[in-house]
Image 1 (cartoon, rainbow, N blue to C red):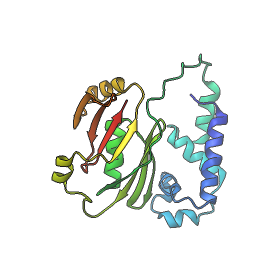
Image 2 (image 1 turned 45 degrees about the vertical axis):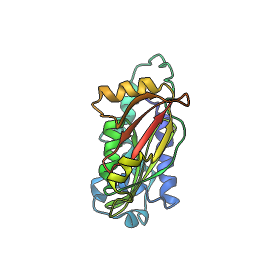
Image 3 (image 1 turned 120 degrees about the vertical axis):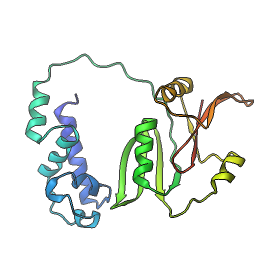
Image 4 (image 1 turned 90 degrees about the horizontal axis):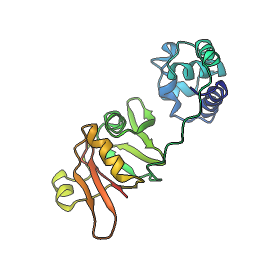
Length: 208
């Protein structure tokens, strides 16, 4: 469990984002029952306070209140530090065109192990997901940019993500029931990669 100081910094950061008029805070503010129906624009006009930011951080950590989170942190017995996990992915920030930003974000979260960084709009029309150092942005479009048949025939890749331990990641996805569009393949140019297709037909290549 993170130390209390970490949670305090997260709350202060959320407050700064609100003051900087970052629309990504709207969805997080709506977690508070009293603000459930506010729009993103209305959320930025609120007299948002640090105590409310702390309340949101507590909810996101699984507690009913900041006091409950604080008590849990203070009561937690010290644990030996965990061994650092190797970073699997390196930086990538392409924009993928999708017809449902929320559904696309949930696919990357639930099937591919990404986290949802933010969903902008109500309903969302732009969002971001990331895993380790790799980030994918999701943008709403009414119709597919590329015909599915064309994408399949031409083998179009929408995003390349450099991946450390690509075989380990491939095994993780297979165990999770993800069906790759291209199986793990040793390429003639020396690299090893596999390809996953998302709900909108966007193909993402994980390259070792």
